[in-house]
Image (cartoon, rainbow, N blue to C red; front, side, top):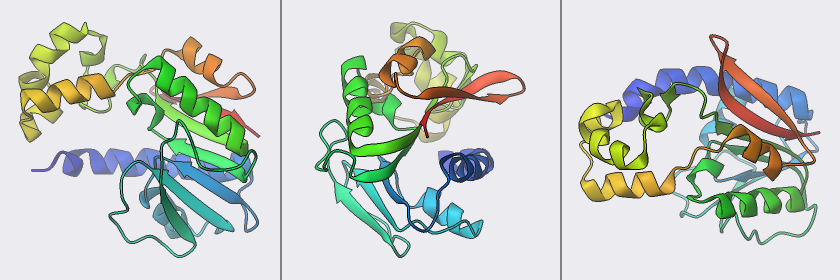
Length: 213
């Protein structure tokens, strides 16, 4: 079994709701140009399934090569989110969904936030809230509240991700290095000109969105 077979129904539920909120909050329409930082085609295919307006142009920026067919009107640029090859204010809207927490360090995350604020007039940036008891990358309660040295020992046999995928120790170490959930006060500091919106599940903060409209 693939880990995504378990996570996909939850992913679809939350991201479908998020797509609708993003379009409504930012007023996305046929004249909007969008930079999707670290994304892929999933979000935009979902938007089309919901018959939402097609933006004038969507540019996906990712550090990886394109590995999927994209809907019409969407282009892929391989580049670093900390140093985007775009002019100041080039895009109407910057969008990013569950990406900034993968940039390893506070310094890298701040650099990505700064570039987003530079290249786009408005933005919607989402990241998991560390106060939520289930760590979304390991799909397991409380593991992200443990010290990293303890997490290193329990990930393989004590998380859903570890039990299903059976990662090597090198893969575990790479994940622990890559993923850094951002404290709410720090996330607010990354986006001083935006508003922080909290997405909740059962009353508990699940995700944070930095929004500038």
